[in-house]
Image (cartoon, rainbow, N blue to C red; front, side, top):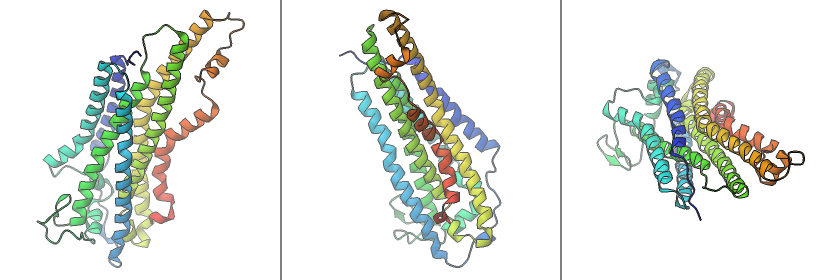
Length: 339
């Protein structure tokens, strides 16, 4: 059996999501307020135990997303252990590693300079710190004490929140790197001039591409739910008179994040889909030339018989998958259990 091979130039597709990431960081650094002056007066001094409501949601979303993030990594490993050219394996691993390191960049910068803005600053740093200070951790009795994730700090729950954010950010980078590398592997081909063999390989590539698309949608959609889980953490402590206005701020922030996730997914899905589509058209022409005459050869029937024709259902599912992160960004603002 010949090894599947992806031409090294196709790994340049990874530059597109890198560009989306760069634009996202540029917008965050220059166009979005690093610390909105949200007044502490919107916090309710009664029922401080409601901080636990937000914490339960945050920990549940963190736990689920952490487990989910391992799926694309496992899938990438499964694809790479199949008969694959050495250069293709190196290119896929290098691509995943570069994306992972880029995702860690903000965390490393914040560790080196504690004054750098954190992601939660855009929805009110003081509100978050004060709201989370209402809670306590069983393993943290003193600020200098150590627990599962390190030093307790002056606000143990807040320290836990920041460290879990860093861990999930690292896992998200690992997952997205594996998703991008896995999508590029859908462009694998074999050195063969046999039309039927190439059609079978293209059908496998199309199936793998759809699998990667749906997995990307699931990962980024639940990444969106994770983001809204921390954004809405202080919400149960907000005064009823201020909930609508503060919720509008969070919904807008979530929409920005959901848009970023959608563009990220499009950046590595569309190039692969276009390349595979051009391969299908080229192979269909070869099939028509090498088989029947043009008068009796039906291109659409040939595509359908070889599993190379997208039906309306597949197009609809792809559209829903691509839009899912943006739709999820609104979920926190419209579901009653987030308030």
